[in-house]
Length: 159
Ligand code: PNS
Image 1 (cartoon, rainbow, N blue to C red):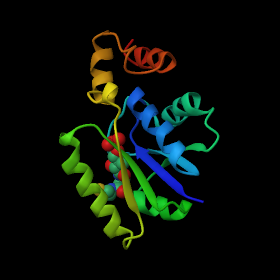
Image 2 (cartoon, protein in one colour):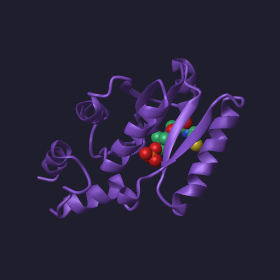
Image 3 (cartoon, protein in one colour):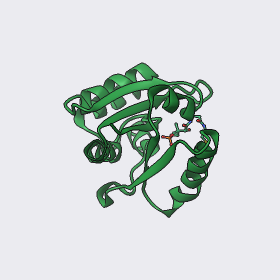
Image 4 (cartoon, rainbow, N blue to C red):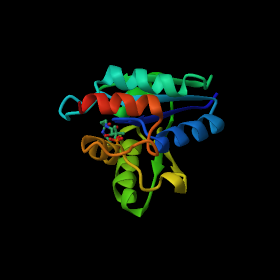
């Protein structure tokens, strides 16, 4: 049974994340989407709101669960028996940060936890949660970036 962990801030979840979740769920037996509870970073949505939102979107995928975590990712991966971390790679600009993070996680886990990168679908290569927040904060159209139910919640935050 191969279990993978897809961690992130998901503030909010975008079509790019959803595409990675669906593809990873096809590759692995079990996929856990893990929302980081980062107390030192301010976020638009609370962790609970983010978990709920992601559940609403991917709840129909039988082998996917959504959780939140705090602390080191590798500790959480060990706790839940996952030895693969999934990350999406949009462009070369993501590469340095992602490479460093994957190597750090491998070392921290005594070479037990590997990172598997899925290249983001070209349709979403430009997309990020921060872009979504920025556009929405000015009342712009985010319907091409996030599902309708997410867009409603994002606009609500900027009311
Ligand atoms: O969506 P993001 O913000 O790019 O995700 C980054 C995330 C949450 C995967 C990363 O910051 C993380 O795992 N933080 C938890 C702390 C940790 O384990 N740090 C060591 C890896 S460098």
